[in-house]
Amino acid sequence: MSVKTTYKGKFASLNVGSVIEQQKDMYLRRVGDAGVKAMRAKTSPHDWSGELTDSIAWRTDKEASNVSKAENLIDAPNNIDSVDIGSKCKYAFFREFGAGIHGTTDGSAEFIDRMKQWFRDKIGGDPEGEDSAGFWAIVNSIRYGDKAQSHTQNKSPFVVPSIPEIITAAKHYSRIVTLGKYLGR
Image 1: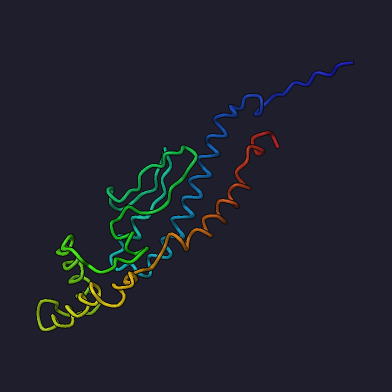
Image 2: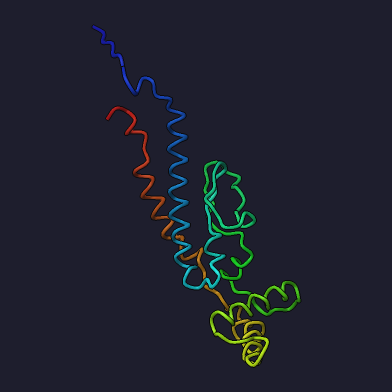
């Protein structure tokens, strides 16, 4: 005796390859969103201008999350099954690792301009007037002080402390993103 089974409905018309691809893309987006959220939570308390926080994004080979400036968008990963999370903002590296002693004049004018803006906003003083001695004391401390010697000035890592949260999100989303819900269950 033989038995013949015929499948009808959603499963029969399912393009499994397409569904798996959509699920993979959704998974990568969710993990990317979780990683961006974790990293931004760590930068925002220490981010005077907000530029670094706004620049943190995720990217797959197909899609990317928004950033405030296009030049800050991270490069697409080489592996099509990957999501990269981080920032290409020039301040990101120094926030993660510290700058060390300022040994060259590269970027010096921009640094001084940004420090003057910060000094006006945070201290409420005039860096080019009566408060210039205080301003230059801060600048020199950042450039050459003990924290510069130990590469810890402005160091507030955001990538490494976020890794456990990203791994947790990846495990969580891997459980809920399945093909099973498309099989007529």
